[in-house]
Figure 1 (cartoon, rainbow over the protein chains, first blue to last red):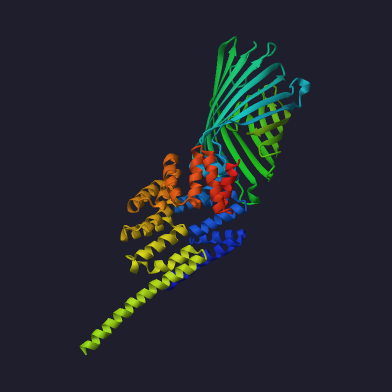
Figure 2: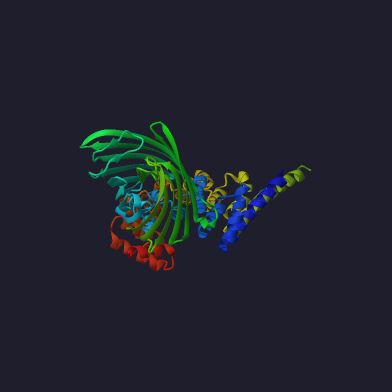
Length: 397
Length: 205
């Protein structure tokens, strides 16, 4: 028994001394290997895990460094400034800005000064974008859709971020001609480390011109007079992050009111609920993120399933590429925390989208997005498609 | 015969005492040697192996408190320092020792309590005043922090830690010029210090 204890002690000593020597030599790969072994064999200590965390940080493996710096605090109760600062940047560089900001709330004054945290910015960022959705059936009066949006971000303390977006589009679709204006409000409330509440609201106002005939599928909203439609969407999501993985269950309630001559004529209420998950692959230097989402749209008792798969590749610190595939076979549904609502008179069958982003400076960025969408006119039973090009600029203050 | 037995017993006791002394001294020597290599857990381990035998020894508790703070085992460190304080209630070095792991844990309220205790034992002690100032600074009570750090700096106007801490306190209170003067003193004390360089860079922004 004594012999076994001595052997175990010798092994522990070995990990400690070896990781220290490798740490002092800045041999980060070997620190990671040996430190990982020590943890696996339950022979770690504060010193070993600290070295491991720093090694991951220096190798730019920020998800791993965040996990170990966080553990130093949780398991060993150590909360000194070095660990706080490392954890802050580990969160920041792994895309967890809200967690980074939240922990900086407890930083001492000089550390807050050093890292330059800003917990209140009335205008955090501004963006503007525009583009066109090119229809394949201009010949039968399914015309192109010009699109424009402006957005504003606000940081209102350590726990609350708001995003406001105004957008506008218009189209002539067969025999009906409409203009659509939208306001979108999204808030991120960081209630605790790794837990975000995301309530959102989306208002859509559609006006038809006098020559058009309303066509509102799956409802009694049929009218031969010019009419307006007002849609209110209320959304709530809860996002929980576990290191590289997150899960986000969500629920959306939508209410569409058809208004003729200022009189509400019909209402259509829908519920949509689903879950999104995301995972940053351990490998490729944490540059690839994969996501999947599935939603059920309850449209007057009829359930439709909508799903999406997406990937984000950070090619280098200045350039990223994002790809998304969406499969719906329906309309009147939302995605991305109700930022987008598909209230088109035609069904969206499926869509593939690619976004290329470029940072001119850390503050100023540009994106260009291409989408190929298969659509179906259910009433007239034919398929067509849209090719969409959108570009936008974003400035972070 | 009786005399011989008594002599033998006495010699045996002396040998045991001597062996114990050597054991403790050897463990201390070994721990200093290992500490130099920055292997703090290992440095503590030899002393901990004989700890139960010397549990009432003030020095071993103080030494283990120090080493366990450096190895990041802050709860253990606090336990050893608490034991040392219990053994020598007037020893302010044990109080200051215990403050270190408490800073590591971010328990600044307890830092203030201990620094107050030190001030009762040694009124006007500059280190106790510094820790009072530090505790209040981290608790974001900058006015109280300033009060204690001003007292400390009068006694040690060229001290690096006091100049830096008071400089940050002044800056938090919006007294930028005073803060700058203090950072410049700190710079003259330690021109290569990273902490000083950060302070100077930020004040010149």
